[in-house]
Amino acid sequence: MIHKTVTYLALVTGLLCSSAAHTALAVPALPAANTTSPAVQAIHTLQGVEMAAYRAATSFYLYNVLNRDPQQYRKMQTMLSEGDSYIAKADNPALQLKWDALKHACTTAKFTAEGGVADTDSIIAVDAALIDLTAALHVSMKVQRATGTVAVNKMADMLYDEYVTMQTMTAAYLKLSADYFGGAIVASRNGNVDIAKLAIKFGDQLGQLNRFYGKHPKIGPLLKDITIRWGFVKNSLINFNENNVPFVVGRYSEQITDKLLQAHVISL
Image 1 (cartoon, rainbow, N blue to C red):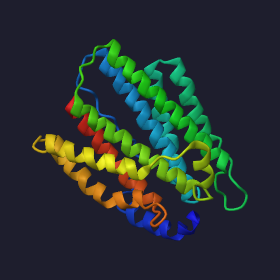
Image 2 (image 1 turned 120 degrees about the horizontal axis):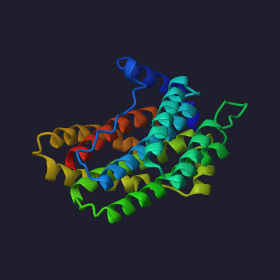
Image 3 (image 1 turned 90 degrees about the horizontal axis):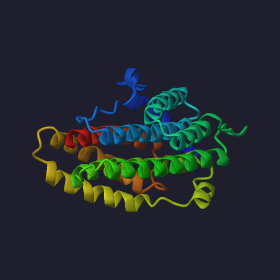
Image 4 (image 1 turned 60 degrees about the vertical axis):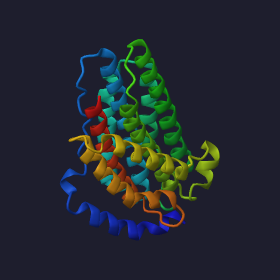
């Protein structure tokens, strides 16, 4: 069962956090887009909402997996506040409602008396709200591209797609880890994300990006670092049932996605 790994997770948490405890709650800043285009700026704001949404949801899952670790709860609250700032800037009532649904799901979860874990309905509520919001955000980004006649940049778009793919894999992995029943109930109600398939896509695109940007003075080093970190976490993502290490996956995912966002903005 998933929660038999708690002792191991506590050990891993201590090892990984000891050297960076003072930065654990730092908000990952989305770099400012180097453009005056209102449409591109609007897309950038929507991407900020998406970043905050994924980070808040994954912190919720880790809060549950790590025995309601208060640090993960504070991190979730920090990301929800960050998302509030982005969604206010987006000034989109429909997206505001979807953001509020995610925020409500994250902050009103019910926990079982036995084991103190979030109940299945609470996990499903966070998952469903995250899926609903991110789908709407992608539609809004597409509209901004069309109405603002934003030029297509295939490789820059691939960098952002890598970011989304990594976040999707991580959210799916941590959702399963947070489910007391090992994902059996959550997965059957909301459908499965094929993490292995997404991992193949991520690896393939990472190879393309390395070939294209490898000699870029700023993006190249970021991709090299991402590639190293991806090598460490890939098998853990794919082999969920054999080696369930949610804290490690969550930590590496943050590092990878932070660098993908940096590379994406540089590429614009």
